[in-house]
Length: 215
Ligand SMILES: Cc1cc2nc3c(=O)[nH]c(=O)nc-3n(C[C@H](O)[C@H](O)[C@H](O)COP(=O)(O)O)c2cc1C
Image (cartoon, rainbow, N blue to C red; front, side, top):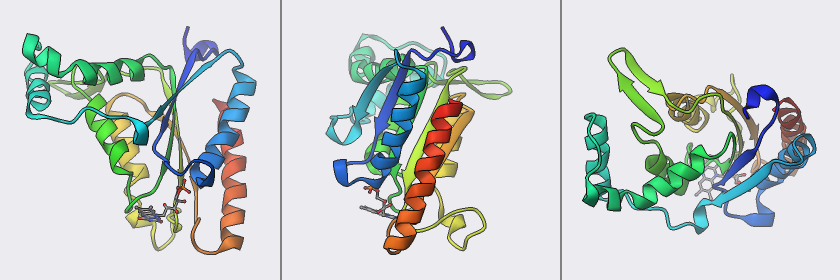
């Protein structure tokens, strides 16, 4: 069953926000999930808490395997063993039909464990492939919602907007994989005083509710 039929079987919640109940990002994600569950009560919600995972390191063997696949070859037994954990994360990713990423902005971009997760799962033959006419995404007909919070304010037109390397990066890398329908909810600014924070959180929660209703 697919999203086009209006049925979502599994949402994978990729959590890169480590602060638990103190996390502003997760407060907004909570509103999204409450409303998403109302819409899809039988949907399985699977979480991957990246900061609690031991993600596979990108060893030379893992990287060698990537180049074998890029060259059109197949992994031999030794490389397959090195790729066991990589494939586990890819399988989990591909088993979902919709994605929620919860991430704070760190140094204008994403926390390093989310970058490592992306480096692990975004692999040729699995999530994308190169053709003579360019890259082709292999993750078809899937949607993604990304909920972020930022200390500052990077909304379009603001002086800090050019420093937002988070939303453009995530759109680019998951776009490469074929996920083009990506909705961002950015709670900002979180660290420029309480009145601004409260207003921004209220706005983000309202946007998260809408994103769930439209999902
Ligand atoms: C390591 C680190 C780096 C950060 N870098 C930025 C940054 O580049 N820009 C920004 O606006 N806020 C930055 N922040 C602030 C967080 O984005 C902000 O407080 C966010 O709301 C935290 O999300 P959380 O409450 O879910 O943990 C940084 C925070 C940390 C811990």
